[in-house]
Length: 423
Ligand SMILES: *Cc1c(COP(=O)(O)O)cnc(C)c1O
Figure 1 (tube, protein in one colour):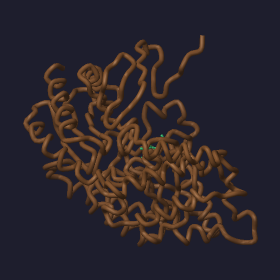
Figure 2 (cartoon, protein in one colour; figure 1 turned 180 degrees about the horizontal axis):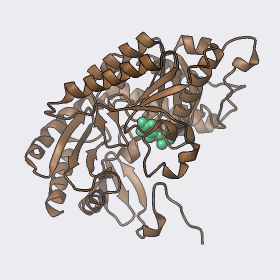
Figure 3 (cartoon, rainbow, N blue to C red; figure 1 turned 45 degrees about the vertical axis):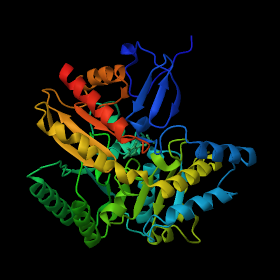
């Protein structure tokens, strides 16, 4: 009998089978007839809510015309239109666009571009990497190397390359130690850059919010200081905005919100509004230029079969048009803030934080991390009551699609409070 093997799932424990059959707005409709609010935005990809007809229609129209083409030889109008549109929301220095398929490939491309950039410039000594504790950049081998090591990467340890890892100055509401945390990281960073002068290739960061390690948030101020240090040393700065892009932080991008600018930017998840896999790695002129020349060895030899898929581009253009028209992401932080107020008095809750459309809090438990089962328990209880959550260990977070109404959000927080009472 054919069997499914699910991602991040111990199949031995997997007894339940829950089919989703349709989605509309903030709701998913399950086969057993239940309607649940999707507070995970289908693993952080959905932007406007489910079932937006404008995007579905754009994909259909494109499919009737041209479904795909080998992008290295032949391009298509949609790819140009998409990058033109995106450009108007990015700093003008980021204007060379390389397409791939998903977040992992976008980061892998950035990693390879940064590597070859220094090779092409005859500065091959720059081959070391700086990342932050708790970072997640995807599941391919290069991406795992850049990410936090732990139970998920343990089996692959022999395949991974070494990186320097600095503490991430994660903060929350009423955090009295944020200044010290930032100062400490910046001090360590500066010392490391001095010690490894001329040997660092790039610094990778999830700007403003580290997603997978538990919606850990830092301040804009920290990114500004980080950028300044990087510029002094001359290494590259890479922003992985795979999760934070397209309004998630309350602005179009974290780089807009912080008024900082990396050398390389990775985008995926929300790019198509959550309809199709598509990704971009965007770079500056100096990086692009380092790959130009008569010598073929300067070429960036990388590509994927579905590069710049026209259906994905059509979806992305339609999604960006909706985003421009509605900018619905701007209203959600205030909605979260209002609903979060009672949680400041919950004795079982700590480290309440929010950034744009994302709200998160830690459940006080003995055993922390992804392995703690309290998250699973809450997920089950919440689903029975009509909301779909996917806690990260003891971290409860709400990352709703921008279709969420204040009523839907109030209901969601109400359910969470009931679940907390029960455990
Ligand atoms: C999800 C994620 C990735 C990986 O993206 P996939 O599309 O799942 O490969 C990379 N970086 C960040 C910050 C992410 O949240």
